[in-house]
Length: 381
Image 1 (cartoon, rainbow, N blue to C red):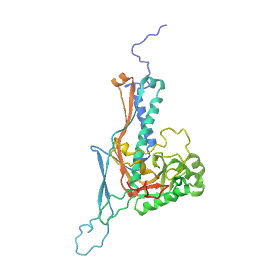
Image 2: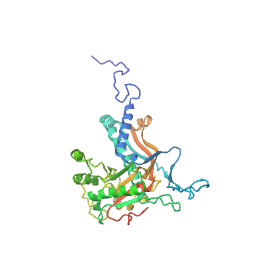
Image 3: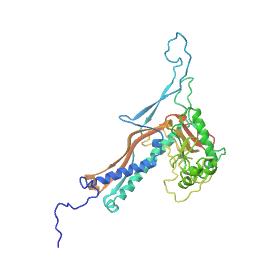
């Protein structure tokens, strides 16, 4: 018997509709948005570790510094009109939003149909990863610069504390960056320096190369960094190190590391820790830090040059060490309508507009190896 069409397709299931009504592609867009944000939030660790502000109706945001003040004895009969030295001193720091940062892909409709939801999901996560990677790299470079900077307070007779560089080990070899005992000593030195400079203990964190992190885990039996009752589970999960000297530790492939990001392979030297490449690492591992002179398009803040991170091997900082200004938070845009018809597919775009810079240099500590702190390649910017 021949099938008779009712003419209204009431039995057709449109898997992109919400509750079988409305836009036939509505759920595709929502799925993508969720995957994109999941990818961004999973990879962007710096966003929640520094001062973040949202910018509206402007291109930059002003941060105010207030220096220390003094106490003095009152003289009977003298009017109280503020300290005679005019304290506390005040200065400002302005962070400008860089140009729009984007990551996009074109999804052919036939490919999407054959691949069902997974195609958009995978593309969305990779777009989120790309934005998060750039976000973290700019923030971490700003913190490294802050560790080499003096306080913006310049009032006469009021010298506020600036940034700190701490050498890991005592040799002229970058391989010291992977010596567990030297790293631990550096963390305690950093904690002491932050205490001495009056930096709050709340919100102190450290960010290391993954191999440095795992070097610490391998030594937990003797360095006391992990409760002995938890060692078995912690070692197996690779998350054994909780904190050192009250500094919570993270691992990231986006910190400046001997002029590269996160890792560096090759023969040992003063600027190379001498780690053998595991091979087939791809083109996105061991990328060198971009020179601003060759990468100026879209950059409106100073993030430093490749050579200025020649001996960098880790960061320790407190939340006030750096700031991020966001004019456009992570967002997703997808073409539709006539554009989709003409091209038989959609352009999927992830975007954000942000800028970063150090705020309080006293809250920034840079770990260096292979050279003394403040020596060539690590001098203040």
